[in-house]
Amino acid sequence: MLSVIVPVFNESQSLRELAIEIHRACDNDGIEHEVIFVDDGSTDGSWDVIQELSADDRVSGIRFRRNFGKAAALTAGMRAARGTTIMMMDADLQDDPAEIPRFLAKLEEGYDVVNGWKRNRLDPWHKVYPSKVFNWMSSTLSGLKLHDHNCGFKLFRREVTAEIRIYAELHRFIAILADARGFRVTEIPVHHRPRRHGTSKYGVTRFLRGFLDLLTVKFLTGYGQRPQHLLGALGFVCFLIGFLGLAFLTAIWVMTNAFGADFDPIGSRPLLAYSVAAVLLGAQAISLGLLAELFIAYSGRESDTYSVAERTGIPASHRESLEV
Image (cartoon, rainbow, N blue to C red; front, side, top):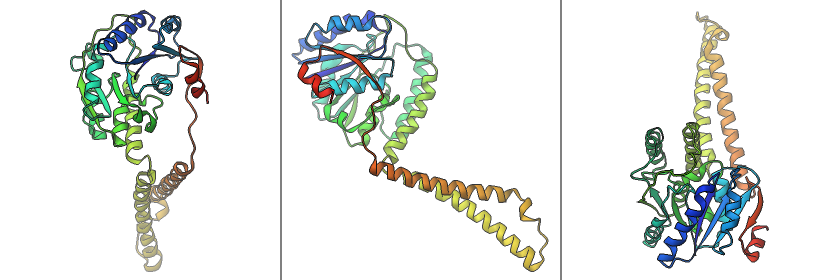
């Protein structure tokens, strides 16, 4: 079974049409499927539409108590999914469900994650060009060369969801996180359609948050299981610089007091403050690295970052497993 997860935030005008297109694309190719709409705190009646659509036993819905973000919506959808393959797509009709068979065909070539690539992107220039810069930075820092890391149209095997955890806005880096775990990742060009209903939910601050999230992903994929390799290395460099500075000042103090050399008092030198600060900073960084290692070694499961108000269209047997 294919599970299609659709995060929803004020997209009531497009949901009926989207459901029809998904069913048509899957039925034409004989693809057994389910559609999971996750209402991320909508205020425009989206939940009423989802409840209506859930009369079809292939459609289910989850409603959050408030807006928790796309990553939380996807996580809730992944937990509710019953399929062996999982697709994520946006609710604004810009992702074309007719592409679903192409995604599945590519996955069957032996890949674990198939990432969409909006080659001809129908968005304003102020979204397109910053996105190009962001994708270049993501490819450079992660080592995974994709044209469109941020594309919300993705297909992956269920095993991927068991090994990666997304929160905040890390949903855009699912391919990078999967690649870091050893999963095979590829991409295919997809048809991108103009927005017909509603407005974009992303503003300029999205790119700043994206850059900070990229640094987080770099740390998680490069040092997530060995934080001391990063923090300890930075701490050692700072400690060494501070130690050399203090050693130099100690030599001046000895030459001044033991041999009568004419040097300015070390207490009046800015180097003293900088050296002491470097030593303290180095010691703190090393200590943080040790604490991070202890946390990774002994930490348990993290708590959820969302709260579900109600569900619809989910079979009772499956609902019980979700509430454990």
